[in-house]
Image 1 (cartoon, rainbow, N blue to C red):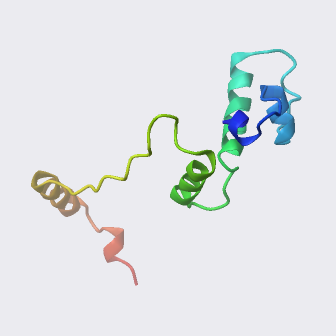
Image 2 (cartoon, rainbow, N blue to C red):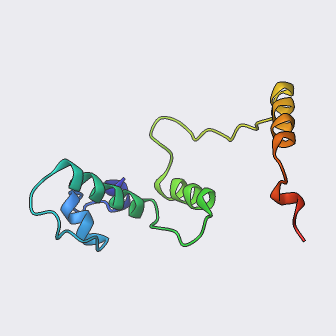
Length: 107
């Protein structure tokens, strides 16, 4: 991802941490736990950075558009989900079992 986003630039973990201003002071030695947490922070930055709101779908789609779909395959369209008759019955039974639901006490 880093090579596609920044062609010709170094793509090592240290270089990417410096690029995104991620603190490297805890990394005095190579360790799996430290490297993993740093890589997670770099990955978030490569996807577009931490987001202030809860618009995950918008950010993810924007990141895919920016980075491109994985090589060799197109992104899958979302699949609609409709509950089965059994799921609807089970849901109604669960709702009926709740004593004094909050959504009925609004006011």
